[in-house]
Image (cartoon, rainbow over all chains, first blue to last red; front, side):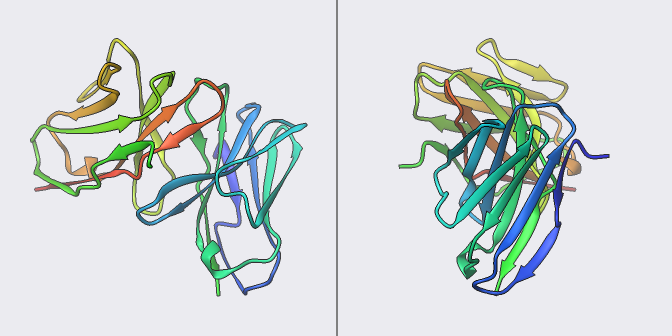
Length: 112
Length: 109
């Protein structure tokens, strides 16, 4: 079983719909992150959380919100999806600030 | 201004070749550095951490040059299976891990 699991793997939705991407981990890490990846732009940080009570905006948080339901769960919501949110989304965890990230297998989101 | 710069490539090399990638970073106070490998449409996977003293793992060697603010990845005896995109990552003293856009490597038979 994967240590960091994302659901769904693929999703197609329409403009204006609300959608939630879920991430769960069994690594016991406190730090969790959401990134999006677009061709040629690399990975960009949307939100991050250092523990259940700590949520922080990343560089591209507009149009997104998150919820840290437990140490192991961190979900990303698009309140009203728009086509330029079409991207590959990754959840990641880390043990501490000097540790590498461990990624989930990604969610491919298409907004039509 | 992009904080982590990588040559996007592609680097097209024959099997058995030695290939090197560099990556420049902008924050002289950054504490940690990593190389990740990413296959098409898959998640990035940690290849190796980069230490001040350098780091070697089999055919892969990573170096950090703080004076010139770059890190490097050397791959010896390239295999077909090394074909992928290699991401350079800079970590500062707080939360932020900054990813480069990646360097694409193609190893041909």
